[in-house]
Amino acid sequence: MSLLSKVTRCMRTIAPLELAESSWDNVGVLVEPPYPSPKQTKVFLTIDLTPKVLEEALSDPKVGTIVAYHPPIFSSMKRLTSADVKQDIVLKAIARGVGIYSPHTACDNCANGVNDWLASGLGKGTSKPITPSLNPPIGQEESGSGRLFTFEEPTQLMTVVDRIKKLIGLPHVRLATADKNTLIKTVAICAGSGSSVLGPVSADLYFTGEMGHHDVLAALAKDTSVILCEHTNTERGYLSAVLKPALEEGLKNDTSEEGGEPIEVIISKTDKDPLVVV
Image (cartoon, rainbow, N blue to C red; front, side):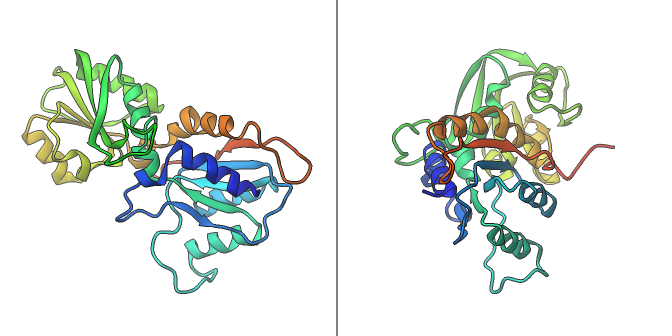
């Protein structure tokens, strides 16, 4: 069994593809190389598969599978040429026998997924999906899009801000509020871009990566504060906190096809959010 097949088996357990937003998302195996190396022993995790991140992955000949949270292939392709950045990524991966798997919204919506990880840093309270999954797979009864977190006790907004900074590892976040001294009881959460998921929800606070200007104004108009951390900052910490150990557990009894070496899971050091506060 190829390394990509082993990773796919594990990922289907961690984040079943049935939970993805299949009407628009592109998840699962995106690149299956016809000639993978039997000596490949490393799984490479990243949020975005950019040219620089790909270069980092391919610099290690042991890397055989890339798990790219955001799908590097989204729109249809009519040709494969090096002139196009996305097509060039696919070509280089295939040439080196490296497979690409993308879980995206399956990881957002699954139990113990990205949104649950975001909720875990808020403090004591309970969390439930904003929109529960219909007929979820066994073990995924708590899956669904977004999360609505309820504190055991109302918590100062700036205390919540500090907890989010600590969870995500940011010195600064963007905050929209009418009153920094307000108490927060409920938090609506959506990793990445949250407008469509959070907009209809009644909550004291929206916690997401990005929202449109007018969506933030609409939230303030109904006395909902907003914390924005930039898109991928709400996703990247999940790789080390949850996905890496989950994959290591799922692959602990697997070895390379040739040589019987154990499988190692590594995280990109190059991958980062493109926006910084200066």
